[in-house]
Length: 304
Image 1: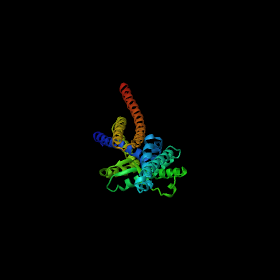
Image 2: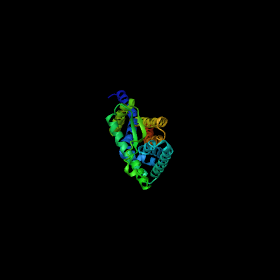
Image 3: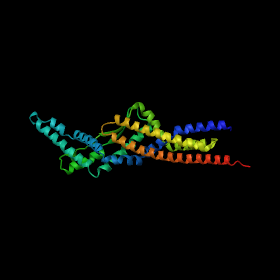
Image 4: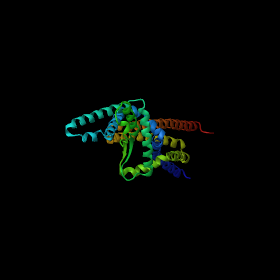
């Protein structure tokens, strides 16, 4: 293999590794924090203490429970002379339900209810992503049923008549992420890529190693790889900020905290890789400087 061919081959391998490295870093993060149920729940569990999440869940749960209870139908069937009584009953019902929901959402049991609801949502969303969707929008929604049942128990404890006898099936939910129908196929491909993230990362390592082995000047190639990795991580950090801003701008009110949590998690992940790239760069610089020093020493004291 001539030096020219070896140099061009090493540059081609370096370019391919540099392009795939940020993708591999992101895929590994997504595998550990989105695909993995344990990682996903660890990311979203702290959101149970966020006031905007508590407010969104409280509003949705209160609306759904009030609509599920039969007080409004009873009130509407009353004679006109008693319509005022019916309106007062509806208002009193909403006040009671709202108080019960507030008790549950601010109770020590809410974090476990939140995790339970998210575990179900993660399982359903993952199955839908793996299947590629059904043509419409794909949503990650947090079901309210665990919270509703806890509220129902609280209402029974408060002595609200009839609640224990009324089946409260509440189909309501809080939407956290929406994947438009036109992008579901692309999201499905990305989801498949995340599932094989470790193989992609291994391919990047092999490409980088091959580039160093083929290169005529291996220490300089290692230096170029470190610079490329650091540049890729920097670009990924900028993309993370842009993606977070886009999500916040297009997410439902109160749901932006979900994007905040993911952005913070990915940001920490990218910073860790940035530190690793910096360490590799430092080693490469030291190797190149050592090589230059050896070369100067040999030329200063030629043999013979």
